[in-house]
Length: 385
Image (tube, rainbow, N blue to C red; front, side, top):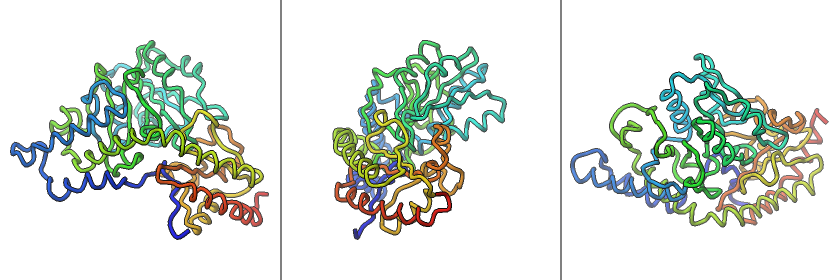
């Protein structure tokens, strides 16, 4: 094909044309500071609030003021966890999982070095949590439970409803990193007792550099970014107006195309997997086959290196990945797949395809045609077989 086949949408997504057009005026004409006293700047507040309403609508939140705009998912994760520790200074215990995104794991490792106690929950071979282990880990010193909604590498969706209910009954703040889930599966936070939820714009066809943190009304909160009065004194710093406006439009589009995400994209993903498993021996899908995001497929190929697969696919114009974009460049095997107990011969050869509404069946057919000869060639020269 004479174009890039982009199948790495869990790393980032293209900015939707509608989002770009909505952003353009705020980069060229409506460039005032929303905190200004004059009308030219001050009138922009209404555009920010419109985006806040759109995001609340996508999440099924009861009040748009529960949304705080941030710069990214990492900032939102850090804000959520640090807020809980600040409002509960007497509590020094955090519960998370071994398969979280580096945005959470790196912070938790830092907090351990600062004297906090962190429990890292295991997952089984399908990537699922043991809720009994979570229950037994909660104690009187637990300040926050931070568990992702869906895993960025495998797409496995955790039982957030049960986790949130457990946290509520035990009186513990619950945060979920929903960066990979928002825009892909429906949310109704009025019925889901999550206290804090993180998301990132560039995962749902908005621009890079904008995210949000949902803070349920009544949840005690301490700001992470200190400065001006923006976001009702909850997040200092001049608002990234263009990107916030774009995020609002992206949320409206995500809501509009939710059925497409659930049906058409899932069918494309399933078609890809079925063809790979049929045509390529010694291949396996990593992660729970039902409880996962509709766009994500993590496939392991025994006896070869994932990086070599990606390089050869790249030569054919196919962009995929071997896991989190935030750990690319590291030669360490996926911490997610290792925690799942996937055999090492498969871990090294696992790659992730993640689709979006811009992928077509023609593109999937091209991947299906291109992948078998790549795997065959690499196995012929592999020292591992």
